[in-house]
Length: 119
Image 1 (tube, one colour):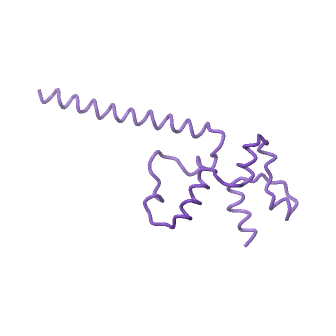
Image 2 (image 1 turned 90 degrees about the horizontal axis):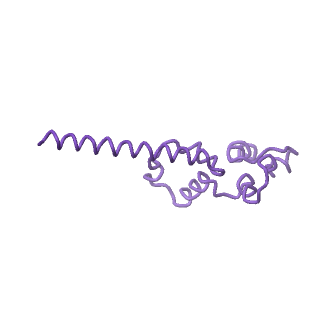
C-alpha cells in the first residue's frame, strides 16, 4: 500500500513541476512576442517575484521603477506606439533640439545617455 502512495505522490510532484514548466514557457513566449514592453523583457528573465518588491524603498521610487519596467511612461518610444508611428520616427526630442540628431528615443537612450549628457 505504501508503494502506491509513494508512486502517487511522486507522480503529483512531477505533474506539478511539468505544469510549472509549461506555464513558464507560455509566459516567456508571450513577453517576447508582445508589441510593447521591450524594456520589461530585458529585466524580467524568470517567473519569480522581484527582489525590489520585498525591500523597503520609498513608494514614489517603487512606482517610478514599475512604470519604467512596464513601459508606462511619457517617452516617445511608448507614446508614439499608441498613435501607430513607426519606431524609426520616434525620435528623442532632447537630442533633436540640442544636438540636431535623429536618435530613436528608447528607454536605454534616455536613462543612460541623455541623463549623462545633462549632468
